[in-house]
Length: 124
Length: 171
Image: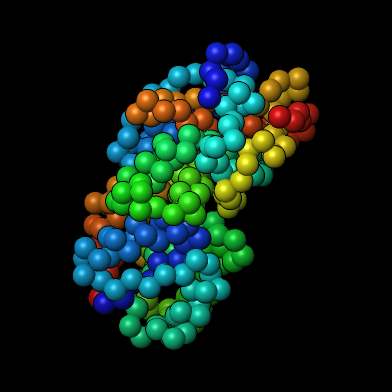
């Protein structure tokens, strides 16, 4: 199982890569939306979950989410938003656009792992 | 970091949201307790060796949110978050980590300020020197910096916000 983390912060990508490693997952990384879509074009068949930041330079996470859900090859891959945008309207907007789950920063590692497992299992 | 010269919390009614957010972020992500020392003039909190990051904010309130931390403390915060020894971190790791800490503090404060005149929209934080910034604040006042003691070292969060229409001053 492969997980794709999309975040402009190397630190957050590292945290997610560490969490993925403890769960036996291969973690692919992208530092912006454009790079994420390139990775998806190559690896989409093996990716089981996408963790997506909201505020990134260039395309923001919500626009990336819309592009993923508009692509028939990628649309079935569950997306979990991992973001500092924690207000209710942001959560609702992301869910409305097709996000399967939502994790607000700051987060405890245990919550990250639990939500990764729950989201991946729910969509399996 | 000199913290002798105090300014008044009452002049900046949004500061409590930042105090709670700093404690929350450092406790949740780095398992570190931040003891709030007080609010000071931002100019007294920057130092050439500090690790710093800043995020411009926009929307109904405009301004700058920035973090400035002593170099060793910045490395320890980031090392605790990523689970590596401070000596194993590159400078770019620490710069990026403090930028993300700034992002998390700003996001947590934004949620706490929902429904107030100080609610703002986030942008991407960048490592940069605080002394190079144009800080927004109320007319004739300096930019406020919230000073924290974390494991005996100092970290400050500069939160310089102005609801649209207010005059701005510079650091």
